[in-house]
Image (tube, rainbow, N blue to C red; front, side, top):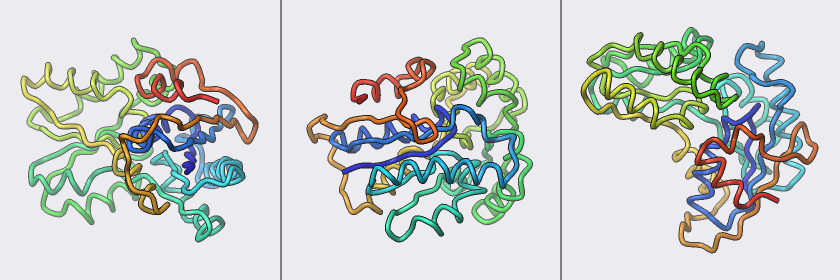
Length: 259
């Protein structure tokens, strides 16, 4: 089986690694846009066009499912991608884990890019799934870019700035950008030190990976032989994992099966 993922850069690593853990025998295709990243500051039409270019390149490898491993692209481009590629190719978007956070019944925060934090999309998501549960949107200035560069000092500074905007009584944080899942341990440790309590972080990678397998008609098989390969495309051309990807455990896991 083959699963393809689309994002501008390393934000897709978390979901790709989740698929690899669920199906070590799955071939993975990472279709990226290194010349256009990050997508966040771009307009909706530009994001849609770039995501469509990457998705078409990925579709050319005949995957069983396509994951849009980017919150921003899922907001702006998911409907267009599905209109072109489904039903022949299942397309799975990425949605912040607001619903399970709200189900805890306690105040929570949503860490996301400034554009997503200010978006109608996020406000609607909170209104639909967290009615009556206090939710705080926290704009994480520069965090996605710092993760993209694997710039440790910039990551630490951005995490501290976001933590300073997070109410001290928050015990659940939704990671509303796929990049943030790559530095979840650092975020968790910083929040624990700042609040003196353990803070639960809710990402989307595991749920998205499981949904991709379901849509593709395959069951998880974590004990399957580790025979899956990795193919990287940059705007449709064969490429390699960026050096920054190897700074993260997810990137190193995937590099073991690089083709």
